[in-house]
Image (cartoon, rainbow, N blue to C red; front, top):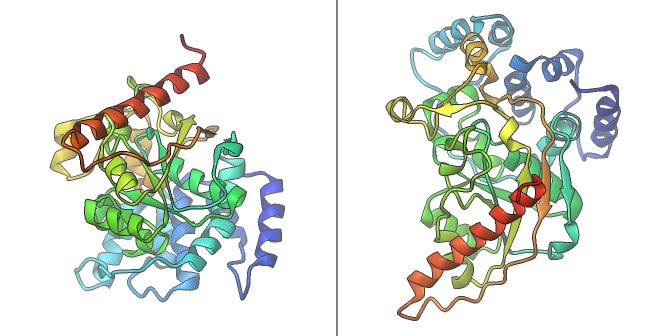
Length: 343
């Protein structure tokens, strides 16, 4: 999956990092090649930079790699922790760790597995603050977001923070898979109005999905159809005079192809979506593959900047906000259809 060029690239990047960076062993390269190993790599990288007494250990990592072994690893860790869950620590955004993770782990995955491409970069402003609004699909771990954040950081030197569902911060499955504060330290902003507004007020560059959870939950059949846009990002754009940079992503639908969402079961386990597809048979044997996705080509087309300028103090402000959001949705839908060669 990851060719020899990625290894050379990663070694070059490691030499440029300050301090003692994470050096890949043969086992780490094996984890990049073997899908159930991606979760191991994420946790090992975290443990290199952080003390994590509640994290996975070597025995449990080995169990990840065999069919059904994840369940034994889970039992082992639960017993080791004294019949309790990992501690739910609250972490703060650490740009240095984000840079290390991006350079040491994301780089080969984005460039040689997801083959990320950033096009029409001339439409982007020189700097922030900014709301980067992107269509969202795939019904899997948000690789379309992570890839775009990486590409924007590489092309523009930006520190990009994604707005993510609260589930990615606090759901028991995520807390057992990954370190409890992993999402926050990497820059995740909870998709709740107060947290979103606070980040906007601080002038950050935020990566946002206007479709909300409706995007990935729409499934394979509606993969190219944009769902209704939320209006909160339009309101905050005007309130703080933050422009919106629309981005069209093509290829994210193949991260988890042929998937459908079972709404009732998804609500029962309190997940934002629960995809079912032929891949789920493999995931039942290797639950650690929950952060993995199919190989695809992720192409991002940056659209012209949408300046802030809405008068929300008027009586018609709320109606105008909604119309503005849906107008942007229609523009992006037209672009998606054009990129796909549809009329």
